[in-house]
Image 1 (cartoon, rainbow, N blue to C red):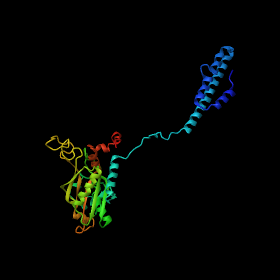
Image 2: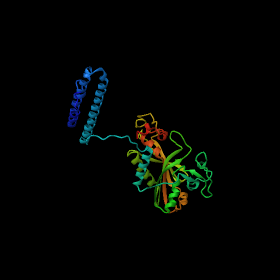
Image 3: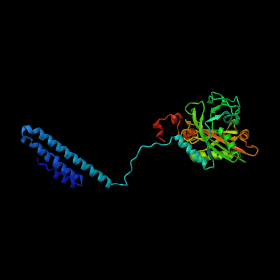
Image 4: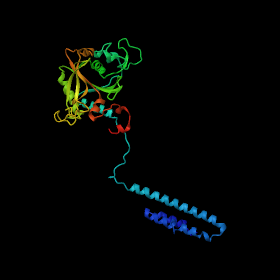
Length: 349
């Protein structure tokens, strides 16, 4: 055989580029290469030696292939190590993100933090005393019915009543007053709440954020100014709010807080024009306003239950839903989309 192993290895050791390596491959394994020349000589081999000759040439071919591939890997690795373009963009790896409700909660907490409100957290499983009685809802009140609230199957406490999955963050008002004992109080309580509701805009488990401010000479203008500050920071500077008289057991006077619709710009009509120019009513609000939540001045008996003298101090409170705020901000019309777990929906945020 006209193959010199030492000569081949010498040539292979001197190779520095992939182009030279390919030339060496052609020299030995190409159509007219050394290996094919050896195979053509098989006709000259005696019949009884042809089989052994063919096996030997094939083994030689495989060995050369292995050595060439090894050399190629060495050259590729060397080139990768030597060449690095730092201007090339990095690889993008798949990553998750916060749930839109979690993001909304953090935004809300950040807005009120700038006003000096302290974020607190109170139990999700509450006593009737804090959830109802300290908020002017005595026994027999409709909100304390089994059809409205989720009661826990545990023994009733003589002083605090039954255990209940907290139906609102308002139960934190009394706990915060008792904790601090003396105003000033600026609280923002964001927590899960539970009620027997389930439709396009209600869920049996939902979030609520409670604002409470108690101090001397606190009045309705402070309440309206705080809510307006929040609305413009969260929804945008062009949004307006209004306080509409209402009734809540634990505030007096009480208000429903409305915010101008972002679809019709508060006009109540599709194109944001006046009634003479546009007769098609807005499908979202139909009146130019959307209900944000409840608010009002803290009832004197609620202050008393928290150990605060209502003759010396006054306060206001509100309770809004982060989900509702998010829906009104982005135009989402189905609360169940937020809790459905559909990754196609959640990836949009």
